[in-house]
Image (tube, rainbow, N blue to C red; front, side):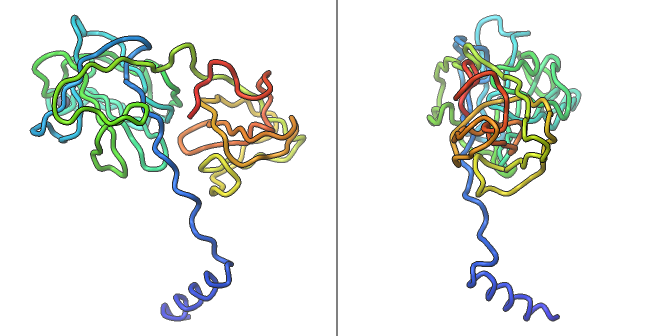
Length: 257
Ligand SMILES: [Zn+2]
């Protein structure tokens, strides 16, 4: 079959509703200030920074202070560039094209492939790479492109210096749950609903780490009817109705995604 005919066929199938459009676009993760709950840090943006929308964070005697994941995700880079550029840096993949970068670290507290939640210490403030003094260089990116930083949905100050107070991981973190489907593998979706793409399965009886919870499609499962979805990795959600968490409804201390 020629390409032209494949195109015509695809158009016809789409018109008939056989080929469904992509799942709804996922919203940005709720990013939080990348330091421990309650800490205040001075964040500076400047138009000659590279990349332009990065923030450099400082506070008094900040060398060695813990740096935490600004949103749930999976660590996909733990890299030491030596005496240039980022030096020691971590990248977290938050799914749906979003990543965050943490550079000039003194040391690492995570490894590639590790699942992290809000408040997880990933490393410590340092002055490695092309840095002239201790600070955290922080970036948010979408599909690899530097984007303007937002915390809890609020745009950072461009351009200038502002104090940011962390509510990251306050009183919470991750929880574990056990999948109970009475045998059938549970479908993992790319977002919190049955309209999102299936991206895998988890076997009955599997213990999962719940990074955060959100509401989505209402599902009736082993534990009743619920619209809660559990995030178990970057771009990986399962219906809470099939997960034993020890709690009806939202789990106390686990953040909303
Ligand atoms: Zn910087």
